[in-house]
Length: 207
Image 1: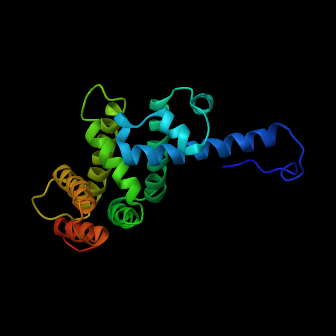
Image 2: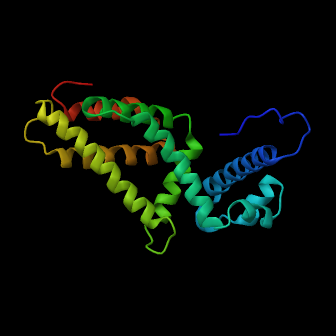
Image 3: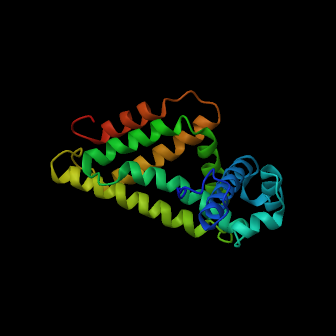
């Protein structure tokens, strides 16, 4: 988000103008980091390559992200999470599950983002990877949130008899994660339709 003020376009230098330039440069660096990490992965990707894509020096990148490559990775991942969290905000029960279908639909137009996430998730299995704790915590949060949604549905008699909400959540998360990997490998999958169809197998009434 950029600050807006009368100095923009007026040629007058000042804190707001400087802030805007800084924000724009940070956005350019994040876009470049996304491109490099998607293509090369975190381990092989370098700050030098990110700087080259932007057209600045490595020092210029570090001026905006003093934490270096780990800070860039965190910023890229947080940007991804913000989109999903906005879509699921204030949703519970069946509405939350419908939100999962909508997220799957949005993924189809964000192949690069899905590829980045899959690559980093695989790399981060290594406990020494800087994103290891991030992914471990994130998966736990996702499973917990989906469990809560299924628990609410179960409380209303909407979950298939004999199915535990936690087990349903684990199955749903495993399914959505796995289908994205197959999709990246060229399998023709309608991510949203497949997600909805699977969730319907867990419910008394389809979404």
